[in-house]
Length: 100
Length: 225
Image 1: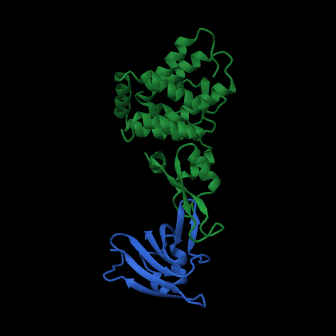
Image 2: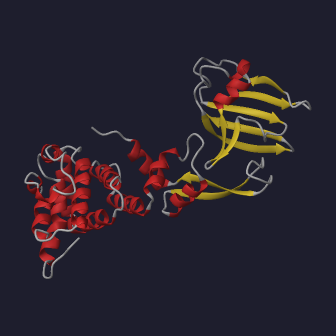
Image 3: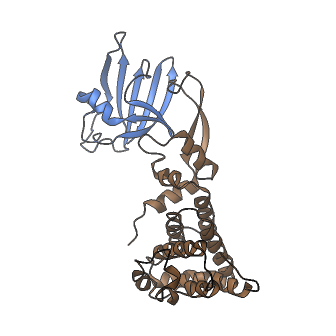
């Protein structure tokens, strides 16, 4: 099972984060090496989201630095950029699927 | 390469001798004695004459060898350095297999034509690595020839960036487009959902390694002895 986290951008542009599905996570991370982020709000302008020649990528180091409580974990550390599948489920609601 | 009138038999034997060189016993040992050779003295080396293709080449160009001949010899040497990393038995099996299929001359020709055209001294090394994969049976002969032709058509700095094309921040779009045009990346059009390159919803080109790109990255990343 993937690890799933939710992020919601408030009007103040602060982001409220919470784990959605992380039960049984070991220090090695999710067994299927997938991290999913369900995000509500505009993703553009966030330092950890980038568009590369091979598509959208998430800078996991930047994500860990901006939300250390949730993402500064051994299984995410020093991973750098990872290719991400991005789906817009409704207006400004996204699912980001990251293969670690 | 300079060719003299009526020299077709020598040219033909050059094509055969390039693969005889691939299957040469103690190829690695001979090449180890040639590390100091330069473009100036490569065709005067007595050690290199033990390798069939150099013996034939020296006979062909013994009078008035040009810079081009010497650069060609240098490319050949670089190519053989890579091939020499493969065990002798495997190299012999490879050449015997080509002979039994009647492909020895054709493959020899293809290698010679390609090496002669290569416009950078890193490319013969890459072509050597590709042929090593074919010798080991990791890729088939046609794939080996196709990949070598793609290497020939690529700009060397673009080629070196190929392994980075799907990692980190990726590569420049211009470089990606160039690698797509030679057949190593595939290009698809997607919608920029976030508008990170301009207007939200605009079309953007995304590049990913195709079958040949993946094989070549695997070969480039492989460390041989």
